[in-house]
Length: 104
Image (tube, rainbow, N blue to C red; front, side, top):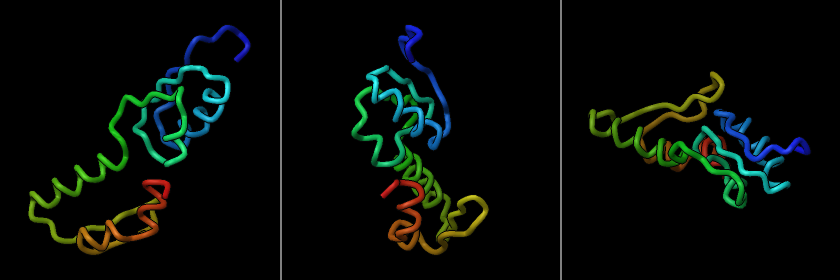
């Protein structure tokens, strides 16, 4: 960061963006993230700018689309592990889903 860098563009994955954002925010270096806003920790960062929609907006859009197709039950996978299944309300109320995808 001492080599006269004026901004960082990327990365594109949420975990990587979270790590890089911790560094860039600490030195007030603009960071254009290719990912959507994810964990709540990112809300406090003033130097990280996301160009993709938030994860919660993407999740709501997917659920709305599933409803429009008449899908009544669905499942959520995380690194190949089933962490939730059921109707849309059950998925939305599942604490593990909120923790994994919304950082809450």
